[in-house]
Length: 512
Image (tube, rainbow, N blue to C red; front, side, top):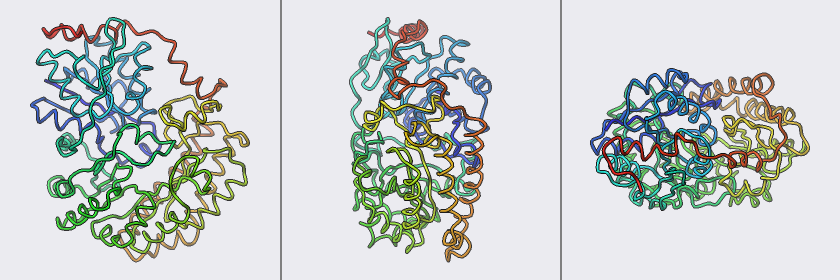
């Protein structure tokens, strides 16, 4: 069976400015098992270019897939782009069977299917086994009703099959790295790069994050097998940089140390970058030399905020003391610390931005990343702010780099100006410049220069977009009202019977 996996282009500033791209791990993870089952699987990565809608549609039509799967690399912000392309494709080829999967459709499948839409099937949750079952159903005639983790319209009625079981053995499904053929994925200064996951899930219930809700339970790969896979990517594919997509890869100290030791034993010259909780860095103070020896050059630390009250409110389960200590320990082992700082959890005033700058200066991270809180509807944080007004109703800009919630005391123009001022103070302070110029580790100096070069372009581009390109919402409405708009539509006639029609067209029993 011919199966095409499509990664749509993303409007995110981080996707466009660096002119570097990482492979869509989610789609590759779906593709590997399908290839092993004998299907003819291909990837269309429209991030390269980025491709225009017309080119994407032309390539899909030329490929003539039996199953077309759209995945999400941008979650909330990617959905309108996928819908636009899929709708256009459906108008040109009504019998094309289109599947949608990812975080956003897992939580919003009722909204998507309750209005006119081009999707015949939505995959809810982890998709590896679900997609194997769906592909098999087209060959065996098995009813889609019998496959867990699906949602679709059948004769005007929404069908929700039971939730799919969690994948307990993450090594049972391999990533289809061969699907990268023809694409030049780079990061960290044009070095060949990939995205990987050592673990799935997060044991911490931060209110603004949906990872613990989506993955349900923290699980990890076999440390030795995972290290061998990274070594294979280095030897067989020429990969130099490994970017961890994990929220918390270091949660299990024993398993994480076993991975570091196994990777060191592979003796490959990889650059590793990832995210980690500050308290886990403090916990591992005695083994941070293994982090460095394995190849780690940067960790993003989710500082989020400096106020203990705010950290408690968002259930961050972190402390200011551990945040500072983690940065100090990383610097001691010549590993770059990047601190994220999120604006919008509470009603900031001018004085709060000043205090935030003072605390960031006291943390003294090597790099910072200023973000705006994005209230995804499936998170507990949404419930606490759904009554607030929004200033951005273009869903494609809900990417953490654009303001969404209206501030009570400050105009959006003042907010972005304060954010940009903090970035200048942090990245241009003498200590920071000194590390870029005189850090004893040559590779770290190179990495810092690369980040400064990208950051400079992004800094100006964000200001340009805010004042001259992106438009703020004209209609005054709350966050809850914004999401409620989609609830009042009826199912589309195209989508409603498409599952049954397509199954019949292949000589199979109708679903249900």
